[in-house]
Amino acid sequence: MKYRFLTLIITAMAISSNILAQQLDISKFKTFEHELDDVMEIIDTTLLKSKLTEVEQDYNNEPIQINKLRLGIIYHETALNLSFFSKSEYKGYSRKSFDILTEMFDEQTTIVELMPFIAAYRASALSLVSAETKKLKPLGQAFDLFAEAVNKYGEISPLPEFLRGSVAENLPWFLFSKRKHAKRDLQSIISKQEKNSAYASWKIMSFTYWAWANQHQGKSERVQALAYLDKAIALDPDYMAGRSRAEELKSKLK
Image (cartoon, rainbow, N blue to C red; front, side, top):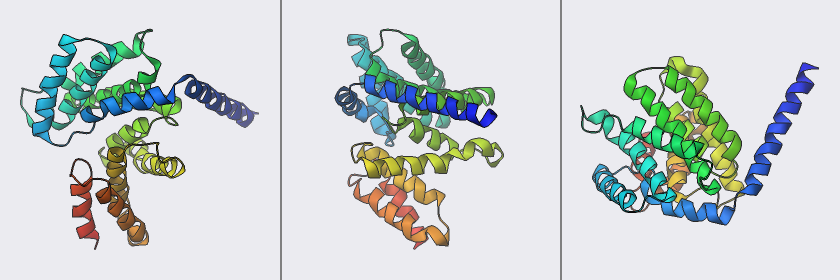
């Protein structure tokens, strides 16, 4: 009986997720994805600092929803790439990001096609709050938010699994219950991309292929890892995503 009850719950969750997907205008979602691409996954710190100033000015001049989301995401990228290398200047940006995205998440008038981005980056921002404050409670809460985001938006957007996997692969070994998501999420994104080539952007896939190979360096998986590294490199001719790391790992594996 208990297993039948569990099956009913899982089925209900899947139906709920499908209904949500039908409510979203996919073409509108993809348009927003394009508009947000320049503030997501920025690895060049000089570009990031410039983009931070630009996005803040844009929001101050025109505080519309898309600009507010861009601000929340650029604060996330600032926290991820700058705050851990600065004693004071960029501290607190993870909390700024989380607060902005939470405000948008809770606001009933938020455009529904923005929600996949908000939910994913909100969870990731909270994980960065945990790292900055060195407290585990926000990390547990972040993974609860990730689970919710994956359930609601994982079939529409790679971001919930991509960001959860990125957090998971950098956790210490003793948090194994959360670290397990790294390999699962990466494989899930790749499988969905194989079924639908429009599922994820070139930037996300370049990072994903590199990260998969990084997680599967054993001899039995060497051929597949090298193939994925070649894909990561080919997708990123201008070294804006995973190419640099992929080339380094490829050299190591060979």
